[in-house]
Length: 180
Ligand code: 5GP
Ligand code: MG
Image (cartoon, helix red, strand yellow):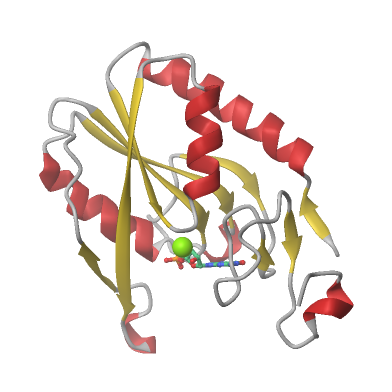
């Protein structure tokens, strides 16, 4: 199993993010909205680390990607509008790749009446991100490799791993030290 980020590194990374968020929001009302299912574990760990009053909510997003010619164009369907009027909104996701998903959700969220809309991700594949789709906060930059664990899946598997590992779908899982 090739570990990209250990459970210990995740803990310290989340603690640093929590300190940056505390400094940024300065006691103002914040709602963290995690995109399902990938951000579930980081959402739970992050809110327990924060020493400011915070509300949290989740959002299930169905993103339909456009053709190659419109790469990055994503049509987002949101089943629930979180009550964020008069509060600061922080959208949280597991990973930012092209940035299209979080960019589209951010555009939509601008209509929800929040005092501000910002984004935070656990992982950022900076080299793949389209111009203008950058995250406001991130914990770790990673190269363009496929990873699973700590919320990230391959065909709904491996989200439960306490660390983030590289995964090659062309090699049997057992040979990569993963449960098959
Ligand atoms: P974006 O819209 O930023 O291109 O895509 C973000 C989504 O792509 C993530 O929420 C995640 O579902 C998926 N994704 C991108 N890279 C990876 C990866 O390395 N591993 C896994 N499991 N999902 C990824
Ligand atoms: Mg996802």
